[in-house]
Image 1 (tube, one colour):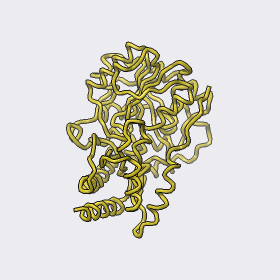
Image 2 (cartoon, one colour):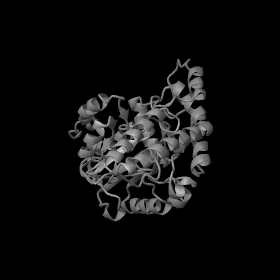
Image 3 (cartoon, rainbow, N blue to C red):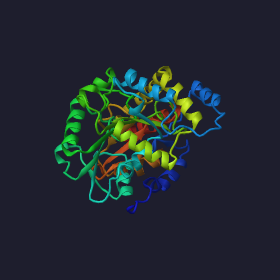
Image 4 (cartoon, helix red, strand yellow):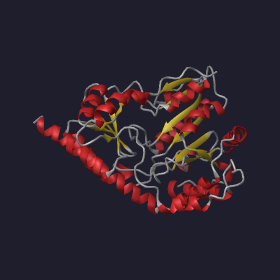
Length: 372
């Protein structure tokens, strides 16, 4: 039974956005994190080439798309041995996060675990299914009633990366509980600090993690960030063939299929690493401008070693920070949107133009100078 859902959290930001827009130099929107850079020409061209889409698309994905996903996992994530039965395209990743518990038959009396600092849709998915949500990063805390475990690495909002050892410990605990475990890895191409500056961010499907078995293990990925395809709704799941077969059956009955032109465009996107590297450098440059300005303005940056955000606090209530930032014409995301454990944090997205990021840095530095 569908539980009552909370109001959409971003509606609370309307008055702050209105005030930020009144700034003499305009708003710098670092809140939701929607890409602002152009979709690469080669992908748009591929989409246009496939517009004669007179037949129904394949829910499982075309053979070309299935192969592209398999090849991408081996080339970019170090995951080998996948076949077409181990991959499934989805209409963006958010719909899968929200609907997966329902599709798996999880419901009343069951527990769904998600990170303490978490994208809200994990808990919404539990509510849709009528299950209980538990925010916990410690496998020892996961109760016997656990049916589904969400990991998120790199994390949204906090940019935390789970190591191979941490992923392996989570998978082992899921197996003790006979629970499904799913890793949301949508920011995996965006490593910045520590080992992730030079090493690939590990997937839950890494052979070192799964120890020979993909049973009840899934990874999900989106092309929204790496390829600026948020408007395309291009994503996929990979892993346990039994789970994916169930999801495929449900999706066939429900008509949840990617448009054929989009499937063709995804093949092109997955096969080209150049545009991904170029986009990462754009985000790196913006991060290198915004991060020191936040430090100068009195914020501390926590985690944020990867991903698309800076997870920051100035040691006061998050809404006080949001209020002060709105006066500077800057809109950020309040920590309370991401769980009950971070009342003093705010999330800054790197998804603004170079000019807007520079404007935010200038405003933050001006305030820091005034406070000297």
